[in-house]
Image (cartoon, rainbow, N blue to C red; front, side, top):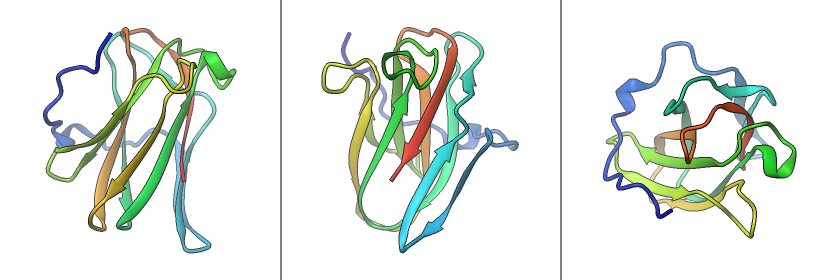
Length: 130
């Protein structure tokens, strides 16, 4: 399947209780790491993570069943800015169903990382932003 027709995402849907994980500053570069048992519990669910990024190049990877990082069959990842504009989207990468998205931000600010299953499935995953 091709990338879903997504022109914008409303960041206001970010839950007040963020999915567990850690984020912060380390050695001058941002990092983000969800717990290995982060999960999509319902068909069509999107877990959104609010992050602060600097301007520059970033990479986010989501590990599901293909890499043994969880049970989510076909994870997909999307990054949007604070206005809901799509910065990047990735479904599969390098022959794997687990996505790695390389993206650039033109300015520092608030961004949102969304994780879901491409086909609407459920399961666990592990997401990392470097």
